[in-house]
Length: 349
Image (cartoon, rainbow, N blue to C red; front, side, top):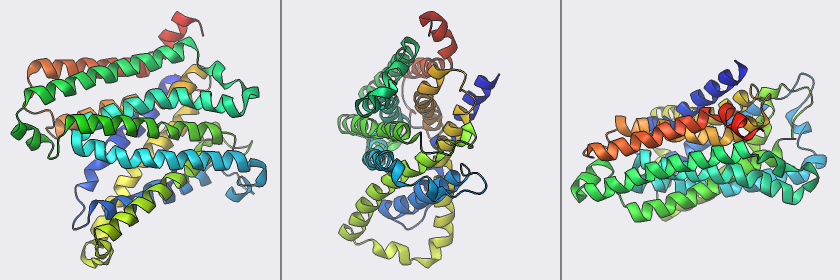
């Protein structure tokens, strides 16, 4: 029962993340770079900091965790956050050229597979005594493979969509639709975004012994998003300068509206990693599920993003065969997210 509850909590957070681009449509008179960094203040700084404070027992301070004893892990966690920030920037571009559904599917699918595999591999390089590679059991690898198969099927559906629609229909669904450019950017975004899970692995020990299991990864989450904020801030401020959009921040008539929807978008985005931390607290009886939790989150993000893609009519005009392939891919992803107990029995680990 606890495992099911943990998976449901992760699913709720995933739904929040997949919905975070909806409030952005309500932002007025701001360029992309302006609203992106403002929502980032909420998503990557304020809310993760508040989340990290939940991991601090009474009588302690968050700054106690950021001591010289943890300096290597802290800087590695932030470093992989910086790399993840690159993925976040290109992630937005993937949706520009492919749409919410297909863009998130390819990027998050790559992120799910590589993030799950890279984390123990890189951790083992620096701390071989931890034997992190032992986490890559047969059931974990099978879960990743099934997830990637589901993503590949959705990618095929996207290719079929690209081939079957006229240029006018493509532009009607996604204004700047460009499948070759979009899929290249989405793969890069997925690779770099996988560094988020690597950062979490390096930072998982940055917690107090008294902290409840469900809150333990929240300080590491804050450090990763802090690194990502730096990357995004540099790029967005560069774009403000290049495009002469600094005046966006002076438009007082829209600040209340835009700040509200940036806060909502940021809260929905952060809910995925807050839910991941809480959910993992209920998965401790299964080391394989704990290892796969990041992959499960990304797989569910893909499922919910495609639900939004259907609602936003990004698949409108596609024939029934294309839709059938899409649905098969979604079913495979749902199976991958909840099939670990079965895979454990098959592989015996």
